[in-house]
Image (cartoon, rainbow, N blue to C red; front, side, top):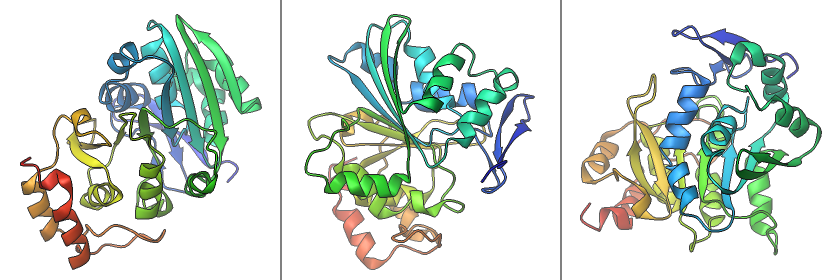
Length: 289
């Protein structure tokens, strides 16, 4: 919606974006720069993994918004030789354009204004970022629909990711981005031979049960701002420092908001008997964790 985005002042005095239509702030805790660096870059060990990677390192940046997560990873990796391929997704370019217009107030885009301006004009740009080579694509798409179509194509042109930033608006406000079919399609988009980790700000039982049912291993992530815990998921258990165990599963059985969303409508429900059985059979809970 035109005019949807506004500047909002955080408790620490910093600025962020507020969406009137969703009624939510982006990075409401520590602020865009600090939260993006802590939650997405550090938590997924992007710098360490990039240093040890041969060939291009692929990140799917789901929920580009005002590009706080994208610019955080660019800033963190500029002194690491290699090739970074960044695929950013959002259903609108409005927050990106708004962030660029208000770059002086937001501050976190400093040094990347030219690249953002180009990305708003062209869907794919390439540039040198310090000693790092960057290939950045911006898909202005309905992500669940795009992912479903990608799944059906005989030849997938987009590379599978090494890391996923999942930063959509909350399940209560944007349920279409948090359904079980979306995460099942996302898991199928991974290359089983390419270890991949995903992180997101939510720690909800509903989300974690959804990720487990979709095929991911799931763990507790670190605190960030207003969140005491976040969530990390991966196709390789070795990428998760604190996997969920039996204690989490016991709490999930008691929760009144744990059953995954199968349709893009937000609901709260206890785990069904079928879901409980599938969770108990997940290898994460049958390996002594």
